[in-house]
Structure formats: C-alpha cells, structure tokens
Image (cartoon, rainbow, N blue to C red):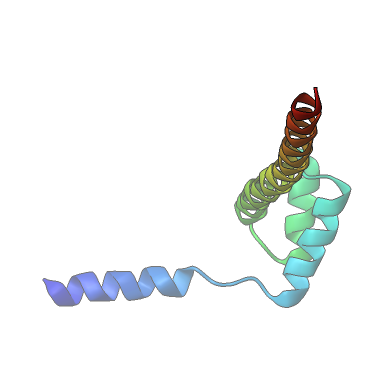
Length: 104
C-alpha cells in the first residue's frame, strides 16, 4: 500500500513542472502591462509559451497575490515611517511644552 502511495506522489511531482526562465520572463512582462488577462489573451499567451491556459491563469492569480502582499508591505512601511515621524514630533513638542511651563 505504501508503494502505491509513493508511486502516486512521484507521478504528481513529475506532472508539476517548473516554468522555464523564458516563460517566466514573458509572463512577468505581460503582468507589467496588465495584471488580469482577458480569456482570449490568456489562450494566445498560453499558445505562445507552450503552456495550458489554466497554467497561465494560475500563474497570474499567484502573481497578483504576491503583488498584493508586496503592496501591503510597502503601505505598512510608509505608514510606520509616518507614524514614527509624528511620534517623534509629538515627543519634541511635549518636551518644549514642559520647558515653557517650567519657565512660567
């Protein structure tokens, strides 16, 4: 029974092939132009790259997910930086206020 399971896993791994560097470059180039493909464009791109339309669709779906994650990270970094600047300004103003109150 274990042998059958191992064999089926091996067949699944064989079926899942990595894309070539050229295919990935072409997909990336197309993603820069449009991050969602119309059905006709997906079929055309799949033919040009020797892939199944489903492979192209899944690649674009995964790429959009990675893009969204990167965007969220960029947005977070920007907001954190702005927050840190505001917090530093607040601390400086609070010190200045305390100094002025001490003079009064």
